Image 1 (cartoon, chains in turn green, brown):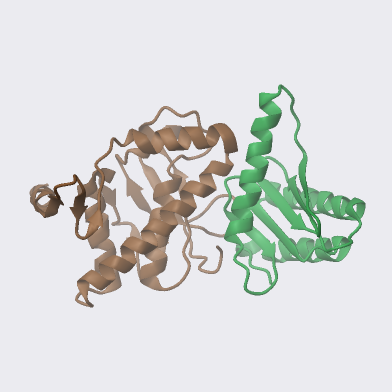
Image 2: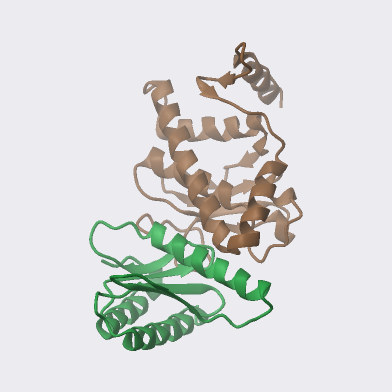
Length: 128
Length: 189
Protein backbone atom coordinates (compact mmCIF):
# COMPACT_ATOMS: atom_id res chain seq x y z
CA UNK A 1 0.00 0.00 0.00
CA UNK A 2 1.27 3.46 -0.80
CA UNK A 3 0.00 6.92 -0.09
CA UNK A 4 1.92 10.03 -1.10
CA UNK A 5 1.10 13.67 -1.53
CA UNK A 6 0.56 15.51 -4.79
CA UNK A 7 2.73 15.89 -7.88
CA UNK A 8 5.70 13.92 -6.60
CA UNK A 9 3.52 10.86 -6.04
CA UNK A 10 4.59 8.85 -9.06
CA UNK A 11 8.30 9.46 -8.48
CA UNK A 12 8.05 8.47 -4.84
CA UNK A 13 5.92 5.48 -5.81
CA UNK A 14 8.50 4.25 -8.31
CA UNK A 15 11.34 4.77 -5.85
CA UNK A 16 9.54 2.82 -3.13
CA UNK A 17 8.56 0.05 -5.53
CA UNK A 18 12.18 -0.35 -6.63
CA UNK A 19 13.42 -0.31 -3.03
CA UNK A 20 10.90 -2.94 -2.06
CA UNK A 21 12.10 -5.13 -4.94
CA UNK A 22 15.80 -4.56 -4.20
CA UNK A 23 15.64 -5.03 -0.45
CA UNK A 24 12.75 -7.42 0.09
CA UNK A 25 11.49 -5.10 2.82
CA UNK A 26 7.72 -5.32 3.24
CA UNK A 27 7.61 -2.22 5.37
CA UNK A 28 9.24 1.00 4.19
CA UNK A 29 8.26 4.47 5.36
CA UNK A 30 9.62 7.84 4.26
CA UNK A 31 9.06 10.51 6.88
CA UNK A 32 9.97 14.08 7.53
CA UNK A 33 12.50 14.51 10.31
CA UNK A 34 9.73 15.81 12.51
CA UNK A 35 7.85 12.53 12.03
CA UNK A 36 5.15 13.46 9.51
CA UNK A 37 4.55 10.84 6.83
CA UNK A 38 5.76 11.52 3.28
CA UNK A 39 5.18 8.13 1.64
CA UNK A 40 5.08 4.50 2.61
CA UNK A 41 4.66 0.87 1.71
CA UNK A 42 3.22 -1.19 4.50
CA UNK A 43 1.23 -4.39 4.87
CA UNK A 44 -2.50 -3.74 4.64
CA UNK A 45 -4.05 -2.33 7.77
CA UNK A 46 -0.88 -0.81 9.20
CA UNK A 47 -0.94 2.84 10.23
CA UNK A 48 2.04 4.74 8.79
CA UNK A 49 1.99 7.38 11.51
CA UNK A 50 3.64 5.21 14.15
CA UNK A 51 6.60 3.99 12.05
CA UNK A 52 7.08 7.55 10.79
CA UNK A 53 7.20 8.83 14.36
CA UNK A 54 9.49 5.97 15.35
CA UNK A 55 11.83 6.82 12.49
CA UNK A 56 12.01 10.43 13.65
CA UNK A 57 12.49 9.43 17.28
CA UNK A 58 15.10 6.74 16.60
CA UNK A 59 17.06 8.95 14.26
CA UNK A 60 16.63 12.03 16.46
CA UNK A 61 17.84 10.18 19.57
CA UNK A 62 20.78 8.75 17.64
CA UNK A 63 21.74 12.22 16.43
CA UNK A 64 21.65 13.49 20.00
CA UNK A 65 23.80 10.54 21.12
CA UNK A 66 26.34 11.16 18.34
CA UNK A 67 26.60 14.83 19.30
CA UNK A 68 26.69 14.02 23.03
CA UNK A 69 29.77 11.86 22.50
CA UNK A 70 31.31 14.56 20.30
CA UNK A 71 30.96 12.84 16.97
CA UNK A 72 29.13 13.84 13.82
CA UNK A 73 27.79 12.63 10.50
CA UNK A 74 25.18 10.05 11.48
CA UNK A 75 24.05 8.19 8.38
CA UNK A 76 21.98 5.24 9.61
CA UNK A 77 20.76 3.34 12.65
CA UNK A 78 20.39 -0.45 12.61
CA UNK A 79 18.26 -2.28 15.14
CA UNK A 80 18.85 -6.02 15.18
CA UNK A 81 16.36 -8.43 16.67
CA UNK A 82 15.94 -12.20 16.44
CA UNK A 83 13.70 -12.23 13.38
CA UNK A 84 14.45 -8.98 11.52
CA UNK A 85 16.49 -5.84 11.28
CA UNK A 86 15.12 -2.35 11.31
CA UNK A 87 17.13 0.27 9.46
CA UNK A 88 16.62 4.03 9.77
CA UNK A 89 18.54 5.95 7.14
CA UNK A 90 18.86 9.69 6.63
CA UNK A 91 17.58 10.96 3.28
CA UNK A 92 19.00 14.46 3.08
CA UNK A 93 18.46 17.17 5.66
CA UNK A 94 14.67 16.93 5.76
CA UNK A 95 13.74 13.26 5.50
CA UNK A 96 14.35 9.79 6.89
CA UNK A 97 13.70 6.33 5.49
CA UNK A 98 12.90 3.42 7.76
CA UNK A 99 12.74 -0.16 6.50
CA UNK A 100 12.10 -3.52 8.13
CA UNK A 101 13.73 -6.44 6.35
CA UNK A 102 12.25 -9.89 5.92
CA UNK A 103 13.48 -12.81 8.02
CA UNK A 104 16.72 -14.18 6.59
CA UNK A 105 17.31 -11.17 4.35
CA UNK A 106 20.81 -10.19 3.30
CA UNK A 107 21.58 -7.10 5.40
CA UNK A 108 24.15 -5.87 2.90
CA UNK A 109 21.56 -5.77 0.12
CA UNK A 110 19.03 -4.14 2.43
CA UNK A 111 21.50 -1.40 3.38
CA UNK A 112 22.46 -0.90 -0.25
CA UNK A 113 18.83 -0.69 -1.36
CA UNK A 114 17.83 1.71 1.38
CA UNK A 115 20.87 3.89 0.70
CA UNK A 116 19.82 3.99 -2.96
CA UNK A 117 16.28 4.89 -1.92
CA UNK A 118 17.53 7.63 0.40
CA UNK A 119 19.50 9.21 -2.43
CA UNK A 120 16.45 9.10 -4.69
CA UNK A 121 14.20 10.57 -2.00
CA UNK A 122 16.66 13.40 -1.42
CA UNK A 123 16.77 14.16 -5.16
CA UNK A 124 12.98 14.12 -5.43
CA UNK A 125 12.56 16.41 -2.44
CA UNK A 126 15.39 18.72 -3.50
CA UNK A 127 13.58 19.28 -6.79
CA UNK A 128 10.41 20.56 -5.09
CA UNK B 1 -14.04 40.63 23.80
CA UNK B 2 -17.09 40.97 26.08
CA UNK B 3 -18.31 37.62 24.80
CA UNK B 4 -15.00 36.01 25.67
CA UNK B 5 -15.03 37.60 29.14
CA UNK B 6 -18.56 36.33 29.73
CA UNK B 7 -17.46 32.92 28.50
CA UNK B 8 -14.49 33.01 30.86
CA UNK B 9 -16.77 33.82 33.81
CA UNK B 10 -19.03 30.96 32.76
CA UNK B 11 -16.04 28.63 32.53
CA UNK B 12 -14.88 29.58 36.03
CA UNK B 13 -18.41 29.06 37.34
CA UNK B 14 -18.33 25.47 36.04
CA UNK B 15 -15.10 24.64 37.86
CA UNK B 16 -15.66 22.60 41.02
CA UNK B 17 -13.29 21.31 43.68
CA UNK B 18 -14.08 18.42 45.99
CA UNK B 19 -12.83 17.94 49.56
CA UNK B 20 -9.73 16.07 48.40
CA UNK B 21 -8.67 18.92 46.12
CA UNK B 22 -9.74 17.44 42.78
CA UNK B 23 -10.69 20.23 40.38
CA UNK B 24 -13.27 19.17 37.80
CA UNK B 25 -14.51 21.01 34.70
CA UNK B 26 -17.42 19.56 32.73
CA UNK B 27 -16.77 16.11 34.18
CA UNK B 28 -13.04 16.09 33.44
CA UNK B 29 -10.35 16.32 36.10
CA UNK B 30 -8.54 19.57 35.45
CA UNK B 31 -5.20 21.03 36.49
CA UNK B 32 -4.37 24.71 36.21
CA UNK B 33 -0.72 24.93 35.24
CA UNK B 34 1.66 27.52 33.79
CA UNK B 35 1.90 27.41 30.00
CA UNK B 36 5.65 26.88 30.42
CA UNK B 37 4.97 23.24 31.37
CA UNK B 38 4.53 22.52 27.65
CA UNK B 39 7.90 24.11 26.96
CA UNK B 40 9.57 22.17 29.76
CA UNK B 41 8.29 18.87 28.39
CA UNK B 42 9.25 19.83 24.84
CA UNK B 43 12.74 20.94 25.86
CA UNK B 44 13.40 17.75 27.85
CA UNK B 45 12.08 15.59 25.01
CA UNK B 46 14.21 17.38 22.42
CA UNK B 47 17.26 16.97 24.64
CA UNK B 48 16.88 13.19 24.25
CA UNK B 49 14.99 12.65 21.00
CA UNK B 50 16.01 15.70 18.97
CA UNK B 51 13.49 16.49 16.23
CA UNK B 52 11.80 13.17 16.97
CA UNK B 53 10.07 14.92 19.86
CA UNK B 54 8.03 16.89 17.33
CA UNK B 55 6.09 13.83 16.24
CA UNK B 56 5.33 12.85 19.83
CA UNK B 57 3.88 16.29 20.52
CA UNK B 58 1.91 16.19 17.26
CA UNK B 59 0.50 12.74 18.07
CA UNK B 60 -0.34 13.76 21.63
CA UNK B 61 -2.18 16.82 20.33
CA UNK B 62 -3.96 14.74 17.69
CA UNK B 63 -5.14 12.24 20.29
CA UNK B 64 -6.38 14.95 22.64
CA UNK B 65 -8.08 16.79 19.79
CA UNK B 66 -10.04 13.68 18.82
CA UNK B 67 -11.07 13.07 22.42
CA UNK B 68 -12.18 16.67 22.90
CA UNK B 69 -14.11 16.70 19.62
CA UNK B 70 -15.83 13.41 20.43
CA UNK B 71 -16.75 14.53 23.93
CA UNK B 72 -18.08 17.83 22.61
CA UNK B 73 -20.20 16.14 19.95
CA UNK B 74 -21.69 13.89 22.64
CA UNK B 75 -22.21 16.86 24.97
CA UNK B 76 -24.03 18.81 22.23
CA UNK B 77 -26.29 15.84 21.48
CA UNK B 78 -26.53 16.72 17.80
CA UNK B 79 -27.62 20.30 18.38
CA UNK B 80 -24.77 21.77 16.34
CA UNK B 81 -23.29 20.81 12.95
CA UNK B 82 -19.56 19.91 12.81
CA UNK B 83 -18.46 23.33 11.54
CA UNK B 84 -20.25 25.06 14.44
CA UNK B 85 -18.66 22.64 16.91
CA UNK B 86 -15.28 23.49 15.37
CA UNK B 87 -15.90 27.21 15.97
CA UNK B 88 -17.16 26.44 19.49
CA UNK B 89 -13.88 24.62 20.19
CA UNK B 90 -11.83 27.46 18.70
CA UNK B 91 -13.52 29.86 21.17
CA UNK B 92 -13.11 27.31 23.96
CA UNK B 93 -9.38 27.20 23.30
CA UNK B 94 -9.18 30.97 23.70
CA UNK B 95 -10.97 30.77 27.04
CA UNK B 96 -8.56 28.11 28.25
CA UNK B 97 -5.55 30.30 27.60
CA UNK B 98 -4.48 29.12 24.15
CA UNK B 99 -4.84 32.60 22.69
CA UNK B 100 -7.02 33.93 19.90
CA UNK B 101 -7.35 31.83 16.76
CA UNK B 102 -8.44 33.43 13.50
CA UNK B 103 -10.30 30.95 11.31
CA UNK B 104 -11.74 33.48 8.84
CA UNK B 105 -9.38 32.19 6.13
CA UNK B 106 -10.11 28.53 6.84
CA UNK B 107 -12.85 26.63 5.03
CA UNK B 108 -13.91 23.82 7.35
CA UNK B 109 -16.17 22.16 4.77
CA UNK B 110 -13.39 21.98 2.16
CA UNK B 111 -10.66 21.55 4.74
CA UNK B 112 -8.58 24.21 3.04
CA UNK B 113 -7.10 27.56 3.87
CA UNK B 114 -5.20 28.76 6.89
CA UNK B 115 -5.80 28.91 10.64
CA UNK B 116 -3.87 31.74 12.31
CA UNK B 117 -2.85 32.21 15.90
CA UNK B 118 -1.46 35.53 17.07
CA UNK B 119 -0.65 34.69 20.65
CA UNK B 120 -0.76 31.00 21.50
CA UNK B 121 1.70 30.16 24.30
CA UNK B 122 3.86 27.50 22.59
CA UNK B 123 6.26 29.83 20.71
CA UNK B 124 6.96 31.87 23.85
CA UNK B 125 9.33 29.32 25.36
CA UNK B 126 12.95 30.14 24.54
CA UNK B 127 13.77 26.76 22.99
CA UNK B 128 16.24 26.88 20.09
CA UNK B 129 14.31 25.44 17.13
CA UNK B 130 15.13 24.48 13.58
CA UNK B 131 11.45 24.04 12.71
CA UNK B 132 8.16 25.70 13.61
CA UNK B 133 7.49 24.88 17.24
CA UNK B 134 3.74 24.45 17.72
CA UNK B 135 3.54 20.70 17.11
CA UNK B 136 1.05 20.11 19.90
CA UNK B 137 -1.33 22.75 18.53
CA UNK B 138 -0.94 21.45 14.96
CA UNK B 139 -1.74 17.95 16.18
CA UNK B 140 -4.64 19.11 18.33
CA UNK B 141 -6.46 20.88 15.50
CA UNK B 142 -5.63 18.00 13.13
CA UNK B 143 -7.36 15.66 15.56
CA UNK B 144 -10.34 17.97 16.08
CA UNK B 145 -10.91 18.50 12.35
CA UNK B 146 -10.34 14.82 11.48
CA UNK B 147 -12.79 13.70 14.14
CA UNK B 148 -15.47 16.23 13.21
CA UNK B 149 -15.15 15.68 9.45
CA UNK B 150 -14.75 11.93 9.65
CA UNK B 151 -11.65 11.82 7.42
CA UNK B 152 -7.97 12.25 8.06
CA UNK B 153 -6.64 15.80 7.94
CA UNK B 154 -3.10 16.69 8.97
CA UNK B 155 -2.33 20.29 9.74
CA UNK B 156 1.19 21.50 9.23
CA UNK B 157 2.60 24.68 10.69
CA UNK B 158 3.64 26.95 7.84
CA UNK B 159 4.88 29.87 9.91
CA UNK B 160 5.68 30.20 13.59
CA UNK B 161 6.27 33.15 15.89
CA UNK B 162 9.17 31.24 17.43
CA UNK B 163 10.90 31.57 14.03
CA UNK B 164 10.16 35.29 13.69
CA UNK B 165 6.82 35.19 11.86
CA UNK B 166 4.19 37.69 13.06
CA UNK B 167 1.61 34.94 13.54
CA UNK B 168 1.56 31.15 13.63
CA UNK B 169 -0.18 29.65 10.60
CA UNK B 170 -1.57 26.14 10.21
CA UNK B 171 -2.87 24.55 7.02
CA UNK B 172 -3.71 21.06 5.77
CA UNK B 173 -0.73 19.34 4.19
CA UNK B 174 -0.56 19.94 0.47
CA UNK B 175 1.23 19.04 -2.72
CA UNK B 176 4.73 19.41 -1.38
CA UNK B 177 5.32 16.84 1.34
CA UNK B 178 7.96 19.06 2.92
CA UNK B 179 6.10 22.37 2.77
CA UNK B 180 2.33 22.47 2.92
CA UNK B 181 0.56 24.75 0.49
CA UNK B 182 -2.74 24.59 2.25
CA UNK B 183 -4.48 22.01 0.06
CA UNK B 184 -6.40 19.05 1.36
CA UNK B 185 -4.73 15.70 1.38
CA UNK B 186 -7.15 13.68 3.40
CA UNK B 187 -5.41 10.39 2.79
CA UNK B 188 -1.98 11.30 4.00
CA UNK B 189 -1.40 10.38 7.60
